[in-house]
Length: 281
Ligand SMILES: N[C@H](CCC[C@H](N)C(=O)O)C(=O)O
Image: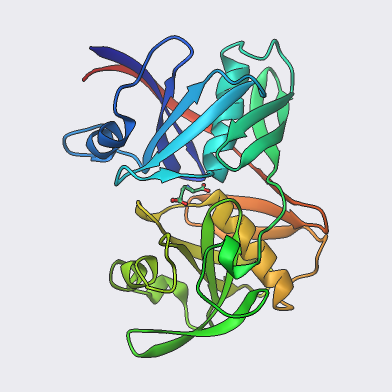
């Protein structure tokens, strides 16, 4: 069978998008493994299905490159908002809603000259209770807690944005880290029963937060939207940023703006269509 797809990215976090309003995608887990592979497939950090929803403009499901399903995707949801607008699926509205496994999210599309320039997403409240992350730590939150990986003590702050994150602030240059070695040891650490997305952060001299990420199910990606939210929240919780302020998170593929308030977390950033195509599966 032939499927049409759209390749899109948010800050270099690239996925293969399928419009399931007019086509059915069989076995998305296996398809994500096959198509994410760049040599024999299309290449990407996973696939994203855009389907009808009875409680939002569309439903988004995200599958990582290893076939596992994520419960939320910040870079992906911005691209879904852009896709819906560009394909006339929201009648030109710039306020749209997308249903996810972590609830319905509200998006504001910044449209100039008929093109979506950036998207602001209300990502919902940060989840800090360890059992809800999940992370097997004592207490009501995990802020600067010691965690031993490879006989080294890291101080971690854990946040869920619907999906689990472990944030680590380092003084050493994160560009020197061997993430291919260290990332999987965090991802599969026994204290994270659902695995974990891990963000390694340097505070820049201008106060921005430079990060690299090892994603659960996809390895190192060039950006992680939910991860950038978790980094902004962790920076506030550890006194490295001020709640309510505009926080710039600098990722390998671009910048995201994060605002952590008492009620919710806002994420603003670009969304880009790379190409469209068809594939025989
Ligand atoms: N790997 C993540 C899903 C993708 C999240 C990320 N790409 C984003 O932009 O938020 C997980 O399994 O929780």
